[in-house]
Image 1: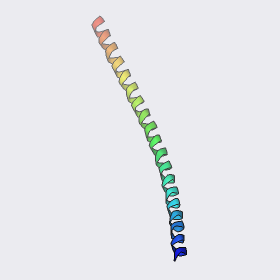
Image 2: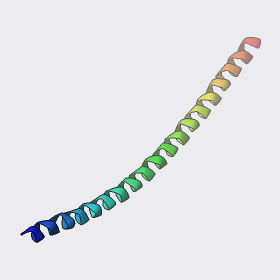
Image 3: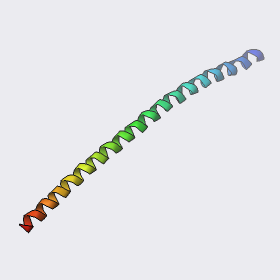
Amino acid sequence: MKKNDQNDPLYNSDISRNKDYEVDKIKTTDVNILLNRVRLDQKRVLKKRIVFSIILAGLVSSLAIYFII
């Protein structure tokens, strides 16, 4: 009976190792997806800031020209 009990933990540990490997593989993919999403969000924010700055500069310069004339 002791021999049967000893085999079960070894079998279970192999299964848990395989599950851990699969989970680690999935997490790696998720991290890459998240990093790509962060990069895309940073690009969008930069584009919005540039457009806003150009509009603001145009508005200020047009107001300055209007008041000078």
